[in-house]
Amino acid sequence: MKRIILAICIITLFGFAYSYQKPILETNEAIDHAKKHLVTPPEEWKTSFPKEGEEIVSLKVNRTELTKHQGFWSGLMNKRKWEVVLEYESKQVTVVINAYTGEFVGMYGPLN
Image (cartoon, rainbow, N blue to C red; front, side):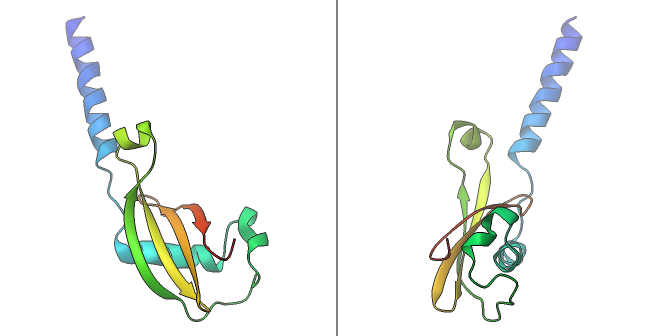
């Protein structure tokens, strides 16, 4: 019985360690994902964009920052997100994506 409990504890420890140290997207990959999400936003965000369907030609990257998610569980599990500030037509937009998968989390700036 002790061996079974010890094995469960070790498996749980390895699972927690893997979850804590997942590989994070590189900066260039994060910028590419952010540009993709700005040009083709998710369905629920499309009403915020005046140029839906048109191609945005000049995107300038002003800043990229890897930050932690807010909250107790996110802090405990070391969850992170990329915040990419893009400038297009003299407007700055911040696209927030998941640092591990590149999924869209949110967007803020003058476009919404």
